[in-house]
Image (cartoon, rainbow, N blue to C red; front, side, top):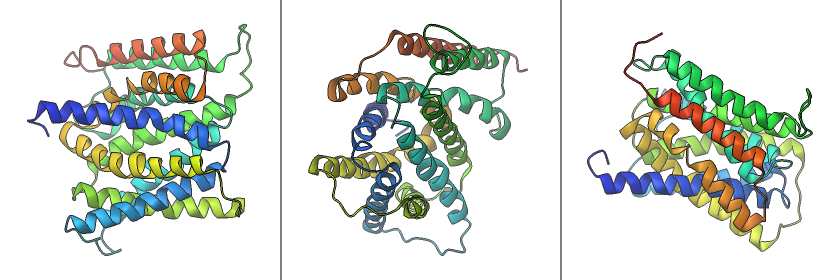
Length: 297
């Protein structure tokens, strides 16, 4: 992948489309099925698909005593089960486009975490300023219009989505440090863990015996196959080939994709506040990514 530019940019484009439309799918499905069971069902289906795929590729799941389970089990929790549930709960009150903008803060969080956890990724003064500016963009989304010193009504939903962005940042760092195994096998282990944690999360919420509309079932299958199965393998390959910083750059474009998908499929309206906030966050990202070879803090 590193030497094939066509494959490289095709991988990036695919992740942008899959991740960008995922918020749209969630925004649609969450009106018909509880967030907890939506996550449980999609991760169970995805785990089953990825285990079959790993076997077809000739890989065998390691013994439970293998330390890889600790790494990829944690990645399944922090990168799928927890953020999927936080995002789904948040999208009960937050539009899909705004969700993508909030998750778009993830690259700046990754920059800060990489300073402490990845060798050779120091936190320079440019990165610090970029993070601060990006954080101002998030503040814009939490303050009411007209301006006053109190939080908007759906601040809890937005807060859950910000926490999911933190989870994705931790995943990006962890994936770079995790023991190297076949991508299909690592993805399968992550989704097995995610399915277990998500189901344990869902069971106490109660079981509904009423089937959702066919359209919602189709959406769940699309998310399981696309977002959770195929994209998971592709994500690990991109991390392995280019590192967490490249994944962070891909996330620059995801909010734009999600905004248009929300307008097209969910009739969502883009507010000027969302556009201003996205521009501020992008400005912070650009500043943080400039002058990477300058002096360290």
